Amino acid sequence: MPIPKIDPNVVHCTVGYFRHLAGTDLAACTFVVNDSNAPVAVCVPYDTFLEMQRCVDAAPPMPIVAAPSGFAPSYPRFDPSLGSRVPSATPPHESPLRSV
View (cartoon, rainbow, N blue to C red):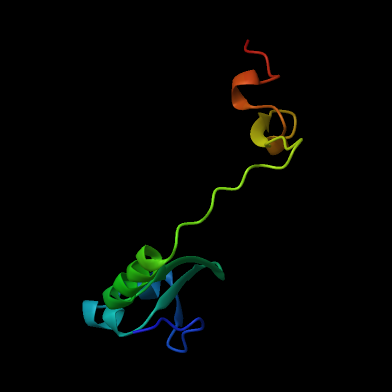
């Protein structure tokens, strides 16, 4: 049973609607659960999930690719002046922030 790339049976629903569904409803089709018009979860029938697992297990392993020369990973850090996480090239164990 191949899994279609675009499932015509996908039902978009809210979290409240999803809570009221019975088990037979969940097995009928794929649900995309939305919260404030943003998708937050996908619920697929168990048979579809098992087929997805078989496809993943049958796929050849991905090759390990080395990072390009000069690549520096970016780690998020907390900037108290901005009140949010901002990208930084400083690893977490070398934090520029001083402890008080």
